[in-house]
Image 1 (tube, chains in turn orange, cyan):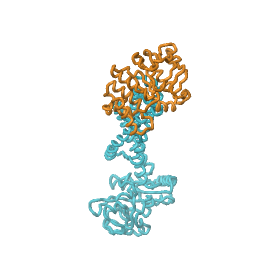
Image 2 (cartoon, one colour; image 1 turned 180 degrees about the vertical axis):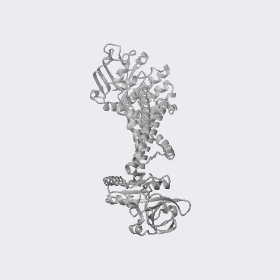
Image 3 (cartoon, helix red, strand yellow; image 1 turned 120 degrees about the vertical axis):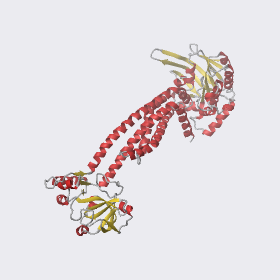
Image 4 (cartoon, chains in turn brown, green; image 1 turned 90 degrees about the horizontal axis):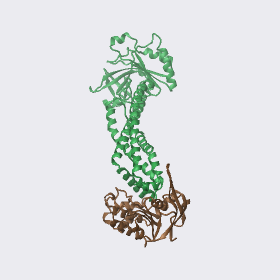
Length: 227
Length: 400
């Protein structure tokens, strides 16, 4: 098993509209390694989310090479990419993306929605994941009634319920107060001993400083540097 | 099992996220399907009535009916149908089976019910394609001798408690019941003035002297029946009869041909009107209901972009997303179909009793309505489902 979970080489991405052409990413290189937090830093609009979507195999770059868990994913079809996302990638979003009518526990168990894990087992593993983020007390509370911090912890539990190789967090603290943000960052840091590679997109220098490696997207040709 | 439970939970979630709009779409589709149920019920009802009318007349059979006269004196001055017409037709078209009858309502032996007392010849059962349930029909000897024999319908036997072989008092005579005929499932109420074998009736030779009838001396005929071995044979026999009866000395006054075609003509006019009315209503309501369902789903696709993105990020494939919206639509239309059918049942029963329009929801009616509901759901969810499936995960996740 390779130490490097995800490797991007010379990745570029351009968006074309009727009015203009926007080159969002230009020859980005990065490597996400097991047990390390990699910060993708930069101001709003610099392409952090685009880079995360490319890393999550949700979007394809216009140029460059993507190696995920030793596999060059450029030649894979939609079904194979979906399988990789299902089995090996977890995601946390700035706006949580919880299903508001479902309970916290059901939201975590939703991680198994497209897997073959039996419903009972999925529920059991979801309960454990919810315990691990300290939210067993609100397991049966509908997600829409949770606080922002609780919602994000449920989202982290959902991403970790089926332990991924790569965890992608897109501005995970962007909508949280300081305490809640601290809690979420602690949860992400807890992925280190579990050997999970974490990619955190953030514009907050405090969280960037806590990561092991950094890719800054505000330069002409972004390269990864140690944190 | 797990997959099915998860799938149903997804569909339930989708529907309850917009209860108001779901209810509007449900109501529109349910009204449309109710009207469709009405149309299908009418179609089926007319079909059944046509079948029974034809069954009542008999296969490849027709009748020439004497219109009822305003009074005996007036009737006497015209040229009513008589046995001489029958003899002339029998001679002109011997390939067909010809028979005649003179029917009048008579009081039953119980003094409470009436029955049809029919004077006829030995050919009537064949001319009407009746089934002999027991014994025999009147024969040539009965007719030649004016025998004290009678044949009753099953309905008459049931009504008066008679059994085959019984001696029964009819008018001023005691007659022996030599046979029983059945009219199958033809209606017991005679249509177009035709006495059927499903009605309570007793058939006696028209040569038998009987009080309350014209008696052996009367050659009056109320109805003249014929049967052929094929549709073509029937048309040929009717053509011959029309030519024969066009002769000045034979032309009957106020006699009307009743053929399968003429029986169904009136029915078809009704059917066309009712079906156009209900069909148009059904079409409009289904279009409106379907459009509101499509509107609901399209707005759902827009509103649920983050959810679509989340599902894709969790490993869903585009077909999984499409099926989700398709299933939601099909569930709404299937529930609407169930509601429409449940509501239609008592309403159609009431309409059937209070109007002349026949309704029938048996047979394929229910599967037709359910099938239409599923098709409707699939058709109107196609565009939203396709749109949802083609959504880029990256764009969906940005759509906050």
